[in-house]
Amino acid sequence: MAILKVARLGHPVLRQVAEPVDPRSIRSPATQRLIDDMIETMREYDGAGLAATQVHTLQQIAVIEVLANPRYPDAPPVPLMVLVNPVITPLTDATEEGWEGCLSVPDMRGMVPRYTAVRLQCLDREGQVVDLVAKDFFARVTQHETDHLNGIVYLDRMRNLSTLAHVAEWNKHWLGIREQAD
Image 1 (cartoon, helix red, strand yellow):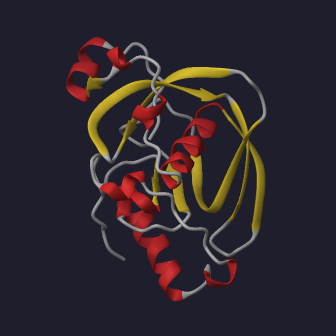
Image 2 (cartoon, one colour):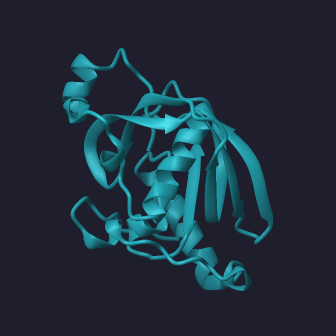
């Protein structure tokens, strides 16, 4: 396994739409190695998720995990999930503003509106169908990572850029308003 280079805001790969993965290739050694490397990279940088576009790969693959993550100490646990060709469908019109950060926009946070409940349909790393309802923080993370696969970063979703803050200042001045995602 390897730690992959994470693209930063401004790199064109972050604005490209990833290609769907052929279900027959999910179990290939190359795809499995990419997934393992993405998991290792996400964990190395304490991310809540990581999309393939963030590691310069235009494939519809994302990984998500939040377990005792120091960047998200108050977040409910989210077990490791691999999302291949994810499709997100809002289950409500209700949205909630919450703090988000991103490994591709290092050391920044901003308030982003997200649907509070979504249907997530995808394949897992074995090519098995996943169809579930994601709510609250889990819904936020799935929307954030799926956005990456569609060339969207969280800054594009912010309603008010005045909440955009460097993490050091966020810790001093905004920490009391504490819902966040990556």
